[in-house]
Structures are given as structure tokens and as C-alpha cells.
Length: 337
Length: 163
Image (cartoon, rainbow over all chains, first blue to last red; front, side, top):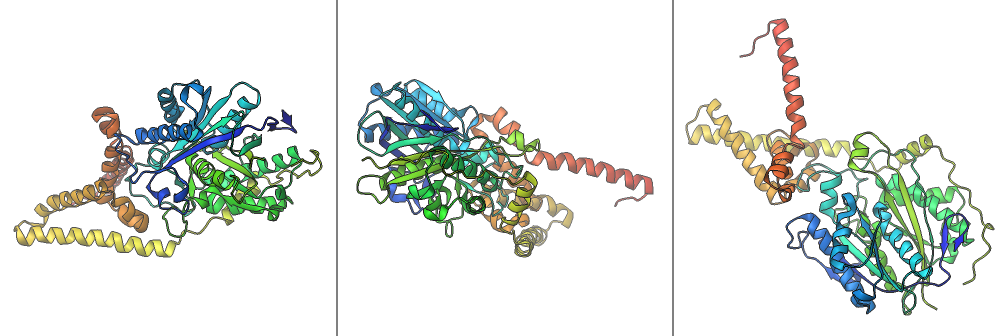
């Protein structure tokens, strides 16, 4: 059901009955390591290419998510997913392995919540009993496609972010046990003219702010209705900007805890990740690995809002001098009553 | 929990113009420390040159080569060291610390070619390695040649002769 201008209200309360996360070595050394299902000790993962390694992450996450949800492939109606690679190859190839009807989506790093919102919508409309949402990213595939060869020696500025090697997948069901998806606010493109691909936090912050405000306007909720609001990957530069912009517009964010997945996944002081984490996998593994556990019956959170942010640029667009169009999708997840 | 009626708490949307925001965002960028980067670049860049000089002297004194004859094997040794460090995944880590220092010719150039070759090996020898090896170094060659051409013209016009 549409609520307000751009929010889907899921009155049937779709349930995240199982989720799984698979990460790489740097995430395994971060503060959330204990919450991940599988940690690869090396970036290569014994694959012949970085792209194959990224695909493996998603294949393993989807496999484990099905196991954790105690659902088999035959019961699954749809798989909704996307990633950062050209033509979202990681998801399409993993969907080939999975062999279930597939909806490919692209929202750059906001794909985690975009796919979760669509999967919940399918469940809420009665168009499926079990639907899986998933996404993945790999540090080296992102470096190779968007920046320079991984071994090329160039100094990254302090505003740059470190793409998370990781994949998260969740099985959403019409009923079952687990945290419920209450509603989702679909963001619009916000582009305030930032052109620097090494400063995506600053580029994406206004998109996150726009979606957060739209969410409160549509639902009538206030920040205090959430125990935690997390942005996807604004990191050390973008997150404080978002905080300031929200304060400027009079949104009382001090009522709640306001964090960022890109700052939670790494120890930003110790690990060499510049401003923090980014990538599709960033908000996916923090949400599905860490936050869902805190939303379980014995956890410390009752309701959270995950605002996954995406920078919708391509190497071609920024080389041609275009600014970075950005988007954010917010999903409200709550403990089951 | 019951939600309050929509529309009760309207937050005003962003009113900042793109220009205002870009200026604001600029003030929030952490500074790149130019001073420290200059010193690091001086140390690492100078260190690489010193190493090159040492290698050249070795060829002169140990192998009895002339200075001119020693320059080719010296460059070859530096390229080899750079390629080994790149292949071992060390060169990019040095560069993050050294900044422009590790971009000095020979080792930096070798790193740019070697890293591109390794990265695109998965796409095959011809379309992968062959087509992508000069992805980064190509610009240096093209504009180096163009610059040399114009400098050559200036030399010709003013009748300056090289040695």
C-alpha cells in the first residue's frame, strides 16, 4: 500500500526468515567479524579472476541464507539482486547457479535495500511465498572497473572509500520467525553537482537526507521511533555532512542513534580504509550480518531504519565530466511481536 | 506500534543550491597534508634515484662498464625490482605512503604497465594483457612524444644543438 508520496507500507509484515553474509579478509579483521557466516582469508578465494571471486561470494551467501531460513530452492519463487559490475554479471551468473526466476536490479550501493524493498513488495502483494534478496561487491572488481588496476601505485585521498568485499542475502517469507519488514521509502535521484569519484560520501549525503525526510513525512514517524538509523556507506566524510544537513532542516536526529555501515564495518582508525567502507556489500553485510542479530528476540534493538546510499556513476560518465547522480532507499525493519 | 497520521511532521526539504552545497562540502574534506606528502615524495623519489645511482656505479666499478654503457642495465634492474614489487602486491602500498615519490620514471612506469598486465590477464593474452598493458602508460608515451616533437621544433628554430 502506498503511504504518502514514495513509501510502500507492508501491512502483511513480510518476515526475514533467514539471512547470510560472506566477507573477505579485511572485513574479517573488522569489529563485526563475529557476526559473519563465512570469512575468506584471502581476496582471490582460489578463483581465476576477481569477477569469479565476487560471484562466489554471492553464491555462498545465497546458499547459506537458504540453509539458515530452512527453505529449499524449489520453494523459492524469486531472486532479486544486483551489484556494481557492468551488466550486473555477479548476480546474473549467481542466479544461473541458483536456477530460480530472477529480477536483476541496479542501484549501486543502495541495491541492498532496493532488492529487499522489492522482495518485500512481492511478498506483501501475495505474489510469492518465499523471495530472496541479495547483493555483493568485491574490493578488487570495483578497483578494476571504476578506478585503476589493483596493484597500480597511486595515492588515494583521505575522502576515498574502501569497497567492501562481501555479500549478503536474505530470504523473505510471508510468515515465519524473524525480524519483519515494515515499510520502504524509495528515493529519488539527488545530484548537487559533486564530480569527484574519490568523494562519494559527500556526493551521496544529500540523497540520504532527502530519503530520510521523505520517510518521516510519508509515515508520520519521528527519529525517536527508531532505536537506530543507519546510512549505507557515507563514511567519514559523508556521514557528518548528512548529520549537519538534517540538523539544518530541523530533523531531530539526536533522538536516536545515527550511524553509518561504512564506519561500522571497519576499525577506521587502525585499518587502512581511508574514509571508511563502501560498495553494495557494505550495507548488506552490516544489516544482514550484524543488525538482524540485534533485532532478534534477545537483541537490543526493536526497530531500525536502514538507508542504503548509492552513487550512480560510471567510469565513462565521470571521465566525460558529468556529476554523480545519487540515490538512497530506506527500509524499516522491526523485531517480530 | 501505531503510526501517527502522515503529514503531521513535515520536514522542509533541502534548500541548498548545488553551488552552495559544493562550497559547503569542500570545507568538510579532510586536508591532504601537502607538507608531509612533499617530504615523503622527496625521501622515496630520492631513494629510488639513489638506488639507481648505486646500481649504475656497481656496473661501472664491478663490471668495468663506461657510464653510458651502464645506463641500460641499470634501467633494466630498476624495472625488474618494480615488477617484482608490483607482482608481490607491495608497490601500491609503498605508493599510498610515498605519493608522487614512487611515480618517478622507470619504476612508476614499470608499475603502471605491470599492474595493468596482471589485472587484465583474465581476459586473455591479446585482448587482455596486450590491449590493456598501456592503458595507463599510453598517455605518458603519447604526450611525451608530442612534447618532444615541440621541443625539437624549438631547438630547430633557435638553432640549439643537443650533444
